[in-house]
Image (cartoon, rainbow, N blue to C red; front, side, top):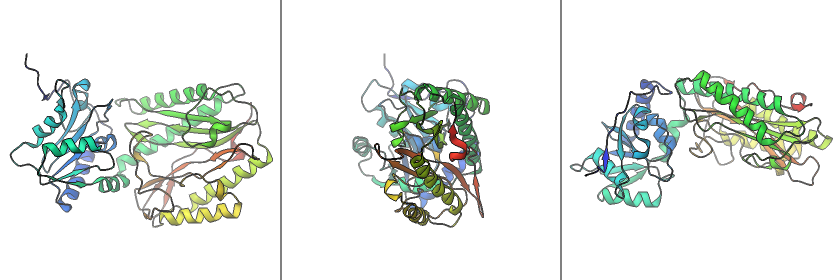
Length: 405
């Protein structure tokens, strides 16, 4: 029996995607404009976030390569046979499946799309994602092609959100608030970080299903941290049981078709001592100031510098741990990042209409010091033409988030 190296398989009907065909078409048109500007004949995408952004398909790699080939007149995903026809159903474009029967059938699938008669002169790739091994293999099938990094251009395109993207982000922020409310309901002495997180995650996933009945459901998560476990913003939840006076960190992350949103809040169980209140109120003051100065036309580094000065006045700059905010969109804790839109000293991007960014100051006071713990607040803001909309509604600060049993 002769088994194919690659093939196409259209099983069932195309699924309803998170965005309209017009939206996906516009994204591809913008990419082809970049290709024209850079004299690029073909783009090979390899990352989860960019393949999802341009096609709708979010792959599950499990150690196998995935890709998307875009030329001036073609667009096709390349997926492993283990996924069958799901990549075709969950994308707006064509799909080629490669098999495991022979090594490097992924490369043969690429050739099947572009053909052998007129190999591309310049190929765009994602230098920030493609491995050296994959780069070498692609070079072996395109030996006369030059490779040009387009990861920065792809990121800059994703930084400006469409109306459809902003709508899904707003729904995500709403659902994040629902998760936060569920956490507060379950906070009590003796409850574990894990069990509280489970309740909030389940609540959010059910709300995502209610709001998007035709979607796929994956990757929604919660980090609920307590005590010393609040020291890192990305610390996994543990089975630690809550005690009176604990500092708590609430973090809910609903994922809607690959689109990430977040709610993060500092809380205390039953009471907060004087040193803790002082640190918390300092971080809240910086958070409020950040919300005031984020506006169209301001530079990210200028926001950072002003907030640094405020932390100096309050006596807490030495406890700051990371940047004051970041972009939202097609990203998760294991794929994607729009590093050009972060509120840090080294980012000079100017905020403009249809960008979406967080304000999230955090300070960490080490264990053994008065007020020990990690303090963090987090709101999401949509930049308009002349204004800013805060789409996070969950309250913050000591007057709201000292949780009594």
